[in-house]
Amino acid sequence: MRSPHRIARRAAAAVGLFTLALTGCSQGGAAPAQSARFSLGSRAGADPATWTLPLLAYRPTAEQDKSIADAETTLVRQCMKRLGIDWSPAPALPPIGPRNLLDWRYGIHDPELTARRGYQPDAAQLARYNAAVRAQSARPSPSIDTQVALGGTDMPADVVKQASPEVRNGSLGGRKLPPGGCFGEARRTLGSATHGISPLVQKLTNASYGESKNDPRVKEVFGRWSACMREKGLKYAAPMDANDDPRFRPNPNGVSPLEISTAMADLACRDTYRVAEVWHEAEVRVQLGYIQRNKDALTADRRALDGVIRVADRVNSRV
Image (cartoon, rainbow, N blue to C red; front, top):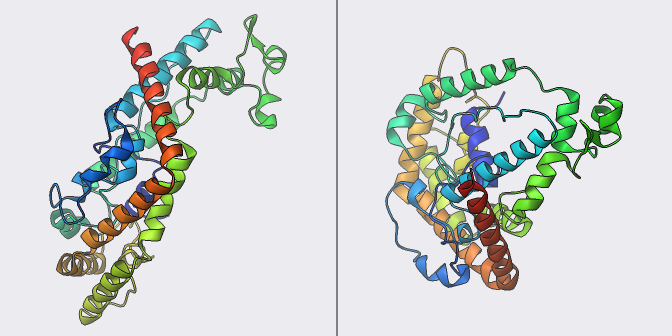
């Protein structure tokens, strides 16, 4: 099994699993005008979790994301109630790993955590997360009819065929199931199935991470980092190679001394050559280029996101 730290860092880099806690633009803000905020030499602080990226202006903030999620849950619950089902979602899992998209996007940076845990997440955080996963696994599964009511009759055929005859015919309790089930209805009401994050924004945010590694300045600083690690007796071509070393995986006996010493050496070399800063600056440049080349589409995406936020606010105000 891969390290939760590694899984979380990759997920954050891909923008998939973690809620963003970064400053985006306001609901009515025109995102392209915000590119002036990104001065390549400046920082809001030494902690990468306080940094930002231009494309975050086209994504909901953490508060907005929660509002959208809450509204979706409310709409699904209302739909299920019409069908005669008292439904509540499983409790959210506690956070693990990075606090937001940028926290671990460029690798480790916290000396205190690194000295205790190497490349692993905080032990108490990991324990809470694992306990919540176990509790969630112990919950009884919803009935097949409930599952189809939630997801619609276009769910996998092997699921639908197990449902009652009425549900297979698209009804429950004498009421017609909405297309895509109650989640489909809720997402149509909100205007998005992805919390307002468009496929283009998702694609560009993923692509900028990989493209930034090919920036000449990033390649140069990676080379310096690698040479610094060789001086310490460690052979890695790039910073994430150390993070992804298969020897540094969860171990019931705890984090090994080798992982701790490697991570501390990694962190020292990162700090010496400002690896995260140089890499982040390169990704800012890449994203600003994307925004310039896709400005019309991204402006439309931001407008659509603003609409989703307005609908979510209205739904939540009626609860």
